[in-house]
Image (cartoon, rainbow over all chains, first blue to last red; front, side, top):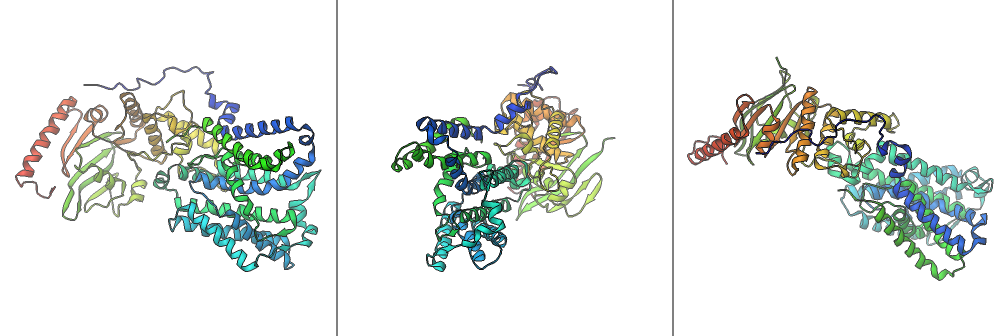
Length: 342
Length: 263
C-alpha cells in the first residue's frame, strides 16, 4: 500500500530578502502587458523601416498630425471590440451602428439643435442598437458572427432606404462648442487623439480594474464556472455589446466632424481594419484574455500601414499586400509571445 | 464537547419510484474531516447535492448547529456556511489566482472598481491559511500554470473566502498524481487545523482513509457503515468491510430483501 506523506513537496524555510519576480513592479508591468508590448514592438519596427526608407517624410509633423486626426475613430472602435472578443463573441455590426448613430447626430444638428444633444442621441442610439444585437445573440442564442453580420446589413439597408443615398452636410458645425471640444487643435496637436487616449485609459481601467471588465474576462474564459459562482453571464455578454454600441456612437460623431458631412456609407470602411487592429494588438481569438492598450496600438499600426507605404515612396498598389503581411507577421509574433491555458 | 455543525436526519430522496436515498443520517462536527465513500450510484452525489441545497429531499430533516431549518435551499445552505467544490473545480484557467478566488464576489469601491491591494492581501492570507506557500506562485499567477493539486487548493481557498465552515470536496483527488494528492491533503489538514470541517468524497479508499477522521460508507441509498478512526485501523479493514457490504448488498438485492432500495 502506498501512503502519502503530507507536505512532501512543499519548500521548507524561507529567506527573508528573497522576492518573487512577480512582486517586482517592473517585472510585473512587463509580464502583465506582454501582448501590448509585443504590438508596440511591431509598430516601432515598422516605423523604423519606413523612416529608413524615407527619412524626409517620416520626420515631418504634418504626416503624424493627419494620422492623429483620423486614427481616433479606429481607436474608439478597436478598444470596444477588445471587450467583445475577450467575452468570447464577435460584433460585425459596429460599422452600421456607427453610421446610424452618426445619422442621428447629423439629423439633430441639421435641425438646428445643439450638437451636444446630437452627441447624446448618438450615444443613446448606439447603446440601444448594441443592446438589441446583444439580446439577439444572447437571449435568442444566435451565433454572434452571423447575427451581427446580418444586423450590419439590415441597419445599413434601413439607412439607405430612408436617406435614398443622400448625404447630410453640416456647415454650421465648425462654430460650435462641441466641435472645438472634440475636433480642434491644441498646441498644434489634433485634440481628437487626446480624447482617444483618454478613452483608451478609461477602457483599460474598466477592462482590468472594474467588476465589469473582470467579469468579461471570466465569462470569456469559462462561462460555466462564472455562472456557478453567481456571475450573470448573459448580462455581461449583452453589456459588452452595449459598450461597443456606445463606442460606435462616439466614433460616428468624431468621423462626422472630420469632414462636416455625414454619408450613408459612414463607418463601412472601418469593418476590416478595426477587426485586424484587435488581433494585431495582441488579443487572441479564443476569449478570456485581451489587451485594451494593445488594441489601441494595433489600431495605430494598421492606420500607419497605408500612410507609411505611400510615404515610403511605394505606389498605392502595394498597400493591400503590406497590410496583409504585417497582420500575419504580428499574429505570428503574438502566437510565440503568448501561451494558451485551458 | 465538539460542536455539531450540521446534521441530516433520515434523508430520503426518490425519483419517481426509484429511491436514490432511503433514509440517510449524516452529521458533521466542527473541525472534522468526514470521508464519504461509496460505489457509483450509491447516492453520494445526491447526498451532497441535498447538502448544497441544489436538490430537495423527499423526506427527512436538516439541523444547522442543532436548530431545525425549514425550506432548505441553496441560499440556506450557503448561509449555513456550506460550500461545495465540485469535481470540475469551476476555475477560469487564464485568470490569476486572485481573480479566481474572488470570482463573482469581487471587492470593489462604490463605483465598482476593484480594491486590488486589499484583494491581493486577502488572497495571500487565504493561500497561507491552507498552506499554499509555494515560492513559485504569487496571487498574480495564472491558474493554468498550476498543477492539478494546486488548482484544487485555489478552489478550496475560494470556498473558504466564501465564508465556508464546511467545505464539501467532491472527488478532489481523482485524476491527480501522488504528489498532487499529497498537496491536496496538505491543504485539507490546514483547513481542519483552522477549525473548519470537510466532507471528503472519494473513490479511492486509500485516499479517504489517509485523510478522514470518520468514515461514512454509502451503499444503494443507505448508510452501510458509520465508523470513527478508532474503529478502523487500516485501509484494508475498510476495503474488506466494503467488499463485505457489496457482497451482502448483492445477496439482498437478489433475495428481494432490499425494501425501498429498488435498483
